[in-house]
Image (cartoon, rainbow, N blue to C red):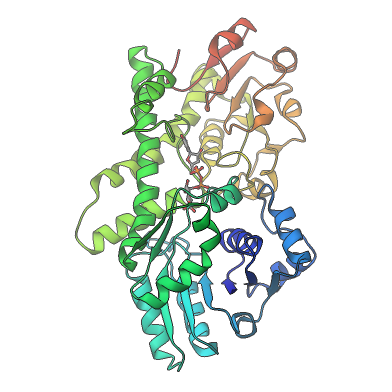
Length: 436
Ligand code: UGA
């Protein structure tokens, strides 16, 4: 089956490469010539473990190609995916659908065979209806159906998430749409990945509800962590204790500096907007957004406290380890590290930082921060070390060397990757999240 993927960003590229790996013929389309040039040269425009090898083998097998020409790319495709960005609209948090609608118009104008148009981009409820109107307005003579098929990929684990999904959600209004989508996902279906067929609006909402629920889980445990610090409990034990209840589940209960990334912050805001538009408030999500926003700066204050408070912190130097919003990505979008750094800089603290993949993206977002070539360079002469992202490279630091290089043995672990007893036994003053 031929599949066209319009938008070769994170979602489009990963999905396209995985579909090709399943044996489909896939054309990834993007209007950004430089991105397509890079892909033709075998260079990945994003960092995702395993993606380069997957793209390479499928390009070599002839099943994966790239083009900037939408009309040519969608020719003979039975499924045309829209996987372009839906950024937060400046000012109001609404998802900006300009690119989605632009692509829908182009598809309508260029359609040369019957096809299912699938929105994979995260789009608010009702977007599929609008895409359908746009296709109808184009006057195309070919049969089409508009289907919603949200993606649930995590950056850093995207290929595995695509190939072994917990579920595939398809929002379709007719049998033509459902049948084509069954063919698209047949290889996964055979692996017994459940496919959930729902109506299009439910599918669109499932995506937002899932992300909002996960953001809520994280925010819940973050507030429990604060409470743990006050009452002398240990948040990791609390997580384990509640997570063993099957109804709650153990995942997404790691307390930390607050969620970031390209999805949770944007999608929770967009959900609030939808709720407002339909006058059906989602107050829990409102609270989650507010709590998470304030948490990021609070983490900066935690580091300042470890330095001895605001007065003591002035002109001190902090080594920040980890800048990306989570490990195994170079993505800095809404990373808590940005707010932590700003809070420290507002207090007159100098920052030397190291991140295994994110420094190029981080540099313009963190003016005044010195980027170092390895963790120990950042630590040299520091008055405190703050672990902000839990990269594996920071899990087994040579604590003896850290102590030698740093001016003071103060370690602030915003991801709870060290055991308090071990670090204290090595002579450090140690602060973490929700534990003594
Ligand atoms: C998230 C969802 O997990 C995916 O299912 C979804 O497809 C994706 O958004 C999307 O909408 O495209 P992602 O943003 O890549 O994926 O990252 P996550 O692994 O979910 O982490 C998000 C944030 O939550 C990170 O800042 C992470 O550090 C934080 N987090 C996660 C915690 O603080 N604690 C946890 O227990 C888990």
